[in-house]
Image (tube, rainbow, N blue to C red; front, top):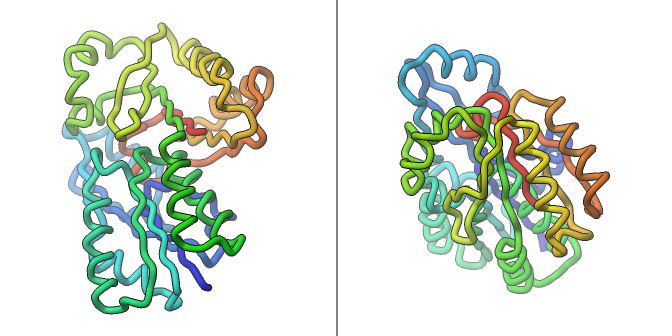
Length: 279
């Protein structure tokens, strides 16, 4: 059985991963300071970072249309289509993918399709996509893959520290944290995704390095991390990502550690210097 894994462009797969023909990306678009950026293989992170710094307004994003998703589903005429989207509570990408699923089921009822709400973003989406590839490649039946991946998503942890919270605050992604954020913009907040995919605060630190140390210590104290893969996504801060990798190698028992670069959507919300972890 042939399969495709369709991801939205907040899934920060590496160029090497994207060489696998099983992966198809549905790009979101970004509006910043009067310019439009398409989050595809031609995305220029430096241009977007410069644009965001020049603008007094937060950038806005638009999810792929149902037709864009449908076209992605049909590439190669697969028997099975697995879809991974941003948290449904953070973006309309999941809803758009679901609309495309209904369209595909009407046009090609013989194709199995399932849309996964990652309840995460960036590195979390990457881990979900890689898990799907692992299971689907093994020949596991479609329904079994769906069940195993849904359980994987439920167990997955997403943690992050951002150099700046301005884009998240201006875009309303921190609705439940407004009071906290207002008084804490000069410190570094340790954040996480809830099981439902909302953003919550874990703690705070006086510097980025202190916050990252605390996050690594938190992962090391979680017995469920052992044997898993840690994905580290960075926004224009490779040295910082290597620091996290080194600390995790020293303190944790991950089986594998991946380093990922932020694409356009992750750049919008992580902003310059942000780190997003998932395991």
